[in-house]
Length: 107
Length: 117
Image 1 (cartoon, helix red, strand yellow):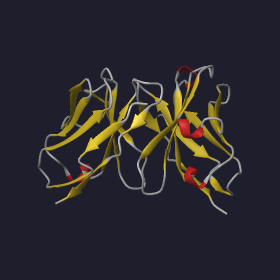
Image 2 (cartoon, each protein chain N blue to C red; image 1 turned 60 degrees about the vertical axis):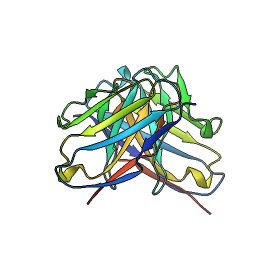
Image 3 (cartoon, rainbow over the protein chains, first blue to last red; image 1 turned 135 degrees about the vertical axis):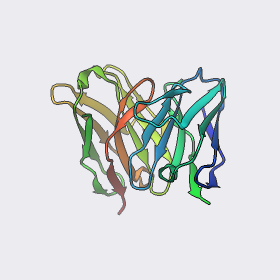
Image 4 (tube, each protein chain N blue to C red; image 1 turned 135 degrees about the horizontal axis):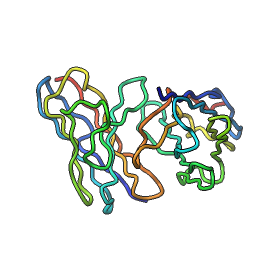
């Protein structure tokens, strides 16, 4: 199975900050890497698919990049509604797997 | 509007069985792969299963193989998760989700399954 490791596990940031979350796969995953946002008590929401494609309706301050085993989610200017937990997920192998999550909190 | 509505959650004793249903609407159900994802209380997301458009291919996380089955009825626009031999560690909110481009682009609101004596 391909393991996914996110860093950091949590971070504190202020409104307007640039935030970067990293996801590392245990082997090359051919850009089949997605990012989700989850707020407490809610279902996850797809933000980015296939490494860098922005899901319809998602603000352009969210972007994704990377290749091979190392991938990044960037929020260019953090907004109050962005405080949430973010998960990466690989779909390169049959056994889809999520990272452990990164909680973005208010500083 | 795409809607996914799970039902069938509840409290079950260890070793028991439960079947979750997911009613889909707002899209042509038979043309999409579907999946199940779960989240234990206070924990992260865990992919559970995927099923092909016609039900001919099914994939499971190792921890549920041999205990869970996934099926669908395209005439009823419904997805199912049959869970047998349930364990305490299966306690979670179970989400039904529709596939997008190698991703889950629509999710239900979730159904809570609690395995406890």
